[in-house]
Structures are given as C-alpha cells and as structure tokens.
Image: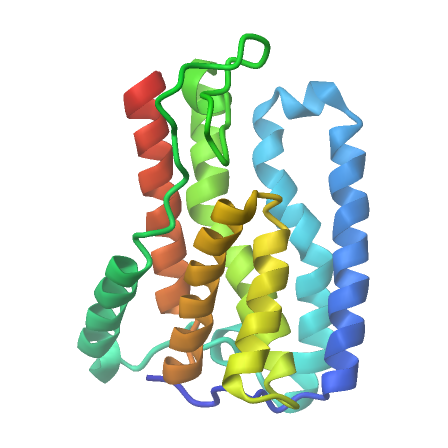
Length: 234
C-alpha cells in the first residue's frame, strides 16, 4: 500500500550511528526524568516518551530521511493514498487478530504482599489500578498512543529497515525483534509473546511498506491489556 518500502534508500552505516546516538540521548533524558520524583507524579510525565524519542527522530530526519528526499510521512509509510484505505483497513484487522496472543498473564495466585503486584504477571502498572483519573489517563496515553508510535518507528521503521539493507527478511526480523523483546525485560514466556508480535509487525511492514498496520495492532494490544488490568483489579 506504500512505496518506498524496505530496504530503505538511506545509508546503513549512517543509520546505525543515528540509532545508537538517538538511543543514548533518549536514555539520558529518561534517566534524568526518573531522578525527579515530583515530575513522575505529575501529568508532565506524559511527555517523557515523546521527549526521549525526540533526539532519534531529529537525527533520523536530518541524516536519513531528508538526504533521501523523504519526509516522516512517506519515509515510514504514514500517508496512504485514498484508494488503498479499504485494503489498509483489512490488513489492520488481520494483524490485530494475529497479534492478539501477546497478552500479559495476569495470574490467579493472589498478590505480592509488598508490591501488591498480581503474582504470575509479566507486566503490571499500579497506576492502572490505584491512581487518580488524571494519572490513569496519562498511563493509558503512554501505553496506547505514544509507545506504539515511537516503538514502531524505532524498532521497525529504523532498526529492522536498516538491517534489511544487508540481510534477508528472516534474520533481519529475528535480530530486530529479539532486541525489541529484550527491551521489555520479561521472562522467557513474556519474551516469546513479545517476540511473536514484533516479528509479525516487521513482516507486515515488509509486505505493505507502511508502519500504520503495526502501530494500530500494537496500540490495540496495549489497550486490551490495560483494560484487562483495570477490569480485574481496579
């Protein structure tokens, strides 16, 4: 549904430098925020994910997209021709259905006596259960909007696409998706679950040339997990 697709038209060596530098600057921004507890408790925390990814986006535009004559919209397939809307909708529904297996186990064994985290879970955010409505809104915004957008750009739009300049689909997808799954810090079962979804989103980016289906499926997955946590525990 979109051209250009992958492999991208930019330099692989330059892209690696962009990913490493952008990731390092993003880490510094995140650690700076974590060192300020007062900010973590305010609605300003909603801006952490966009701000942490801003260096990567700026570097990607200046050093990769612009020299290749691309914008963010056409560089990552974020602008689709009207005639492809129906196809895109069918693709999104299919990908959401295929990725629905990536659900974090909420467990049935009670809660940890200290953290109150449900036993057996891979992921748990107490803000979804005990926080005020404003803080709850911030958390949902982070998981359902910001995380899918920026993670898909970073892991599929940049990392996977750059690997595809030298590698075939399978090894490029395996490497990029393994890094994506490891970044979540889950156990083996959680790793496999996230790996499956990441691999699927890399495949759909390969097939369509657009990050939109992966972003939509990623957002829906995160939304369902958040709703499940709130429905069972809030």
